[in-house]
Image (cartoon, rainbow, N blue to C red; front, top):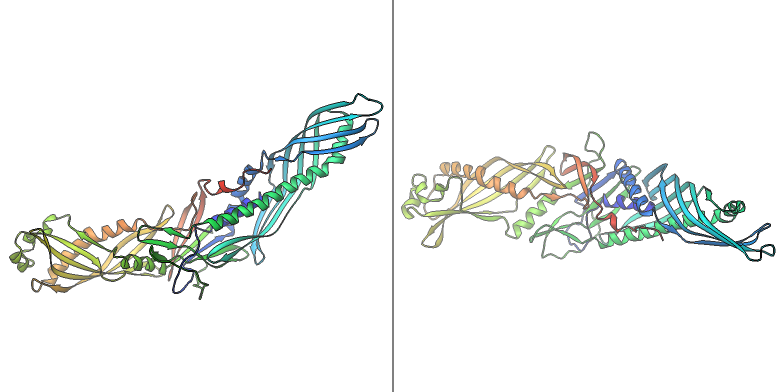
Length: 493
């Protein structure tokens, strides 16, 4: 049961990760902290999963020859020794400089088994034999283990430092059989049964730790966002184990899909705040503003921040006839021609997390194209500088949100149709921003940034706080599936 407890402690903390990543400044830009409340949740959930993996496990057959007064030499065999159920009295999980310590104490286990014997003596030369069943109650079962986590090139290694299992007492109830058989079972087999239980659980610990370590090694190196970007989720430095939490840092920056990265040691740790306020939560995920700015840079560099606007709520605005009073030269030169707006971001948007919200500065170029005789003719370019705020929210396991326009300014960058009346252009730009561009950007922002939670787990009752330059998500966690837990050993053999 104990190795399974450790699994959730890890799975709550880490998204699928590894580290073939290069950064000019390798630091942890996403920090994940699991509190003592989260550790208790992990422990309780995994104990239930561990018990399910142990029950119905069969222990090895036990055979002994014993000398029975007045009966002679008897060969006694215990077979099909099966663990039927386990009851937990108390359990604890503690963290500190020595590692993660898990202790299960006061547990009881109920076993079923078959018995058979055969014996012969000079008094009974033809021999006698019998068989039947028995139940065993294992009392005061204690299991403990200590593990640690270490960063190896951006991947975590799980190290088993110490472990043990001890059976306090055993009682046997015999169904049928001769009177002497009960005492034989107590005297000759009690120690063997206890050793079998201890060996089986100890083996489970070793198998479980090995499985979990292999699972950590198999986690993918990056999370693919789309054809343009991947998220660098290599671990940075060793996890920090305090007396009430576990904290791990993840690189967390977006990179282009054509980049090859190599992990390096952390240079200067980025300090996060210690609390989201309010009632305690199981986990706290802190995301540095550099994460958002790295995404901005990647998509800008890949020329993904441009689009052709050929539809408007007022479609007449995309015909030169509608502009005859606003820009007479345009109508005069291109009468009654359709138009489109070629919109592109002129520099990577800048994201800044304040203590109240998230601010965004976006610089756009809007090129007015005239469509004439199958040709696209650029006639003017207007630069637009936008200041906006972003209200973050949690949808599913993603940080998403909504962009709100604060202010903007327009300037004529160049024109082939003479000077433009910028006050009128400003009014038209406002309409385009509010009805098309901001709604379009919000539709893209709905995808959000995935929180570092494994499949099968979900954040719930999440609370968002801002602590410049970090956005912090404090949340409880619910378990909704078995995807990773199914990788644990199913039974003890």
